[in-house]
Image (cartoon, rainbow, N blue to C red; front, side, top):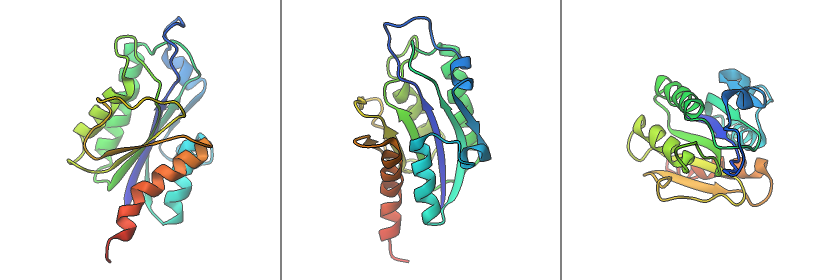
Length: 180
């Protein structure tokens, strides 16, 4: 079983300026490929990894990009990050599922629903109905745009590590119940 994992997250405060630029991500958490698996991943992604390793899944790391709280993302910054995540996913197909940590409160300067836009882009490169599990932080809002076919959400109630683990286990559950 091949499961792609990634993250693109920032808590946006639209009352804050200036806009969040790429340097906010590269200065906080910005990992690619195998670096994601080497122990430096943020807690939700670490939860994905632990649950997937426990069942022997083939983990397909994409990117993990997280910035500190700040103003909305510059359109160019979001576009570059979203394109990289989606291109890496497309290049690594086929996969049996995708796990994403999106925080749930990220906005772009011209788009309040950054998670919804990213999920549309991800869905467009995957087969219809392929499961996408999304870990969201406490207080996240799930918008109509985020509700893509095959997408499910796990909203943080305790620790971020637990949220990531629960998201991965939910993605794996239907597969573990199928007859061999």
